[in-house]
Amino acid sequence: GAVVSQHPSRVICKSGTSVKIECRSLDFQATTMFWYRQFPKQSLMLMATSNEGSKATYEQGVEKDKFLINHASLTLSTLTVTSAHPEDSSFYICSARDLTGRNQPQHFGDGTRLSIL
Amino acid sequence: QQQVKQSPQSLIVQKGGISIINCAYENTAFDYFPWYQQFPGKGPALLIAIRPDVSEKKEGRFTISFNKSAKQFSLHIMDSQPGDSATYFCAASPEFWGKLIFGQGTELSVKP
Image 1 (tube, chains in turn orange, green):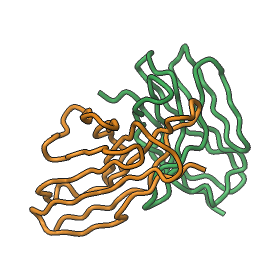
Image 2 (cartoon, rainbow over the protein chains, first blue to last red):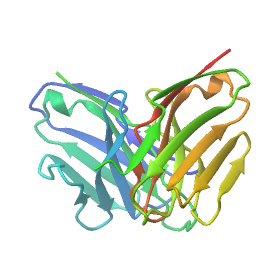
Image 3 (cartoon, helix red, strand yellow):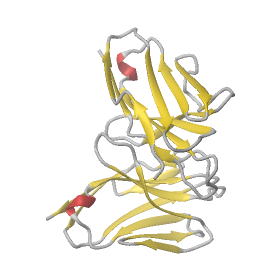
Image 4 (cartoon, one colour):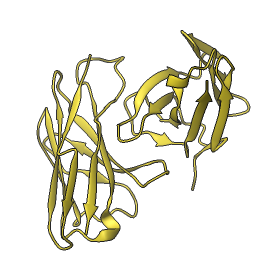
């Protein structure tokens, strides 16, 4: 079945550093990938829609200069949290849409647990 | 604006019982309604989904009931098992491939 891989699965870093999270579709091509954030015991909130070869579309209230998204190929999107602070600590999850399968739903990665000290 | 409302927030069911989770939506442009299961530390996994042109869909022990006029849909888990203990999210999207709006989630615990 379709697999979406996220790396790293967990990262702990100091306040002020920048962190890059990768989202890869392993066995299909994805023109569109979505980035979600989930705080403990809460729902998934869409942050942005990442389109291959073009600028990402950010949801209202999400700072595009803080959460940099790059979708350089049909199998890879990256989310960079710049100058991360403790309030950015969260579970970041990506999903990808299969380019070729009209009836294929979004496939989710297993998330990245980000902890900012 | 919360576009998808989910209830209950938590649910405890005995093994073999029926688990029922409800969702209501506001946006009549929504055209795709999936349910996801999420275990701790993992991403959500698609369980079952429905389009508004049908009122019910069943896959194994999981059934979605859909009421378009009331703008409500629900997930029924028959013969609930301890392995079903997880958090369940309903979601909605204006198109099959579009961005998903998630409900608040229901933490299900199935007691042996």
